[in-house]
Image: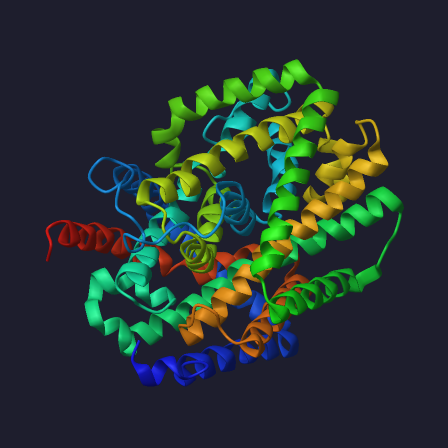
Amino acid sequence: MAPSDAAKPFDPFVFWVSASVTVLFILWSVAFPDSMTAAVNAVFGYTTIDWGWLYLLTAFLLVGGCFVLMGRTYGGIKLGRSEDRPEFSDFSWFAMLFGSAIAAGIVFWGPAEPAYHYMSPPPYFGGTAKTAAAGANAMTTSFFHWGLSAWAIYAMLTIPLAHACYTKGLPFKFSSAFYYVIGDRVHGIWGKVLDIFAVFATLGGLATTTGLVALQISSGLKFQYGIELGGGAAYIIIAVLTAIFTLAVYTGIDKGVKLVGDLNMYVFVGIWFFVLIFGPTLFLINLTTNAMGQYLYHFIPMSLFTAPGDEGNWLGSWTIFYWAWWMSWAPFVAIFIARISKGRTIRQTVAATLILPTIGDFLWYGVVGGAGIKFDVTETLNQHGLESAIFAIAQHLPLTGIVAVLLFFLIATFFLTSANSAAVALAMFVSGHENPGRNLRAFWGIALGAVAAVLAGTGGLKAIQTASIATAFPLIFLLLLVMYGTFRGLNRDLAGK
């Protein structure tokens, strides 16, 4: 970043183009909701049906690339200068990393997805619903969606970002990840275009999660306490959440995010142990172990399964949606992980972003999702929607009232951790500063809430899902470029060029 740019609170071109288009989208959605819904549905159909194969292939290649990065050639390279040391303890580092990247999605889908596949077997496995085989296949499918492929998307983008920012002195912008692809042109118009795109991808990805959280909290209040917020439930909950995380991001995040991340991880682990001990323990252990084996055995064919002959668009609603969702989150998650990983090696960072979270997801899904299968909460899902699954499971456990309160806490804190990091990342994208101004952070916090509100209010879950797919589509090509550039840049550094 040039000295004149470093003195500016933000890049005027990147900020005003991003902000203007965001405001126009919000106004369009409010004034012409039918037009907006038709447009996003058209994008959904085109990207998932015509380009689904490329989503699958890209995710598969990224997994391979991440394992190469952890190998002997690149794994020992430090993300920083030789004197740099990690800023956070291992536990706090991983807690912030996991919390910002996973958000409340794991609380939403962890109990819901296995139960859904249990009553509606995926096309890869087929078979009869609600059988022992259906339960095992349902869990394997869930592991696949939240396993290595998903986390590789984050890890592969994190490494070039951290390396370029800490060893080359580049600004904390999404475009810096492409330094090893286009060189100094990241400082010109191409870099600005990349940063503007990162803003929209982040808005679409975080709006997806915000909408899901609003639906889950609304359902939980109704299911657990009989509290109905009426037709404006999504707006009310999103407004409250937006106010909280905007205030938090305005006042500063370092201590706050660390504290929330640590506390959140303790509650997360505590709930997992509680369900394991007081739930059907042996069933959960057997199901998890079996699903891990099936996942490893079926990983390659599942990664490249395009559902030939399937008359519906199951992949678009599930696997492609997930890959797109993770891709839309990648810009802000990667820059946040890069921001907190100074002084770590490539092997440490990739392992903490790829291997450990995958294991964490498997354990959570196997126990909490397995409990949903054992207790058969499918009827509740049919009556109250996917968002009710976690609270339906709580009904079968002791201390239901306390468990429900902890679940609300977990949903909120996971989300707030992600929303904070997203708002800060958006401010980084338009400024390039490691610590952007609080007014800039607050603006993007409000923008995140506004986009989520119009999507949740006008189109519900379908529009929310489609938003992430629409904004993530170009990232397929960008991630492939990043992977190429990462190895190119690291090889040049190793060769001393």
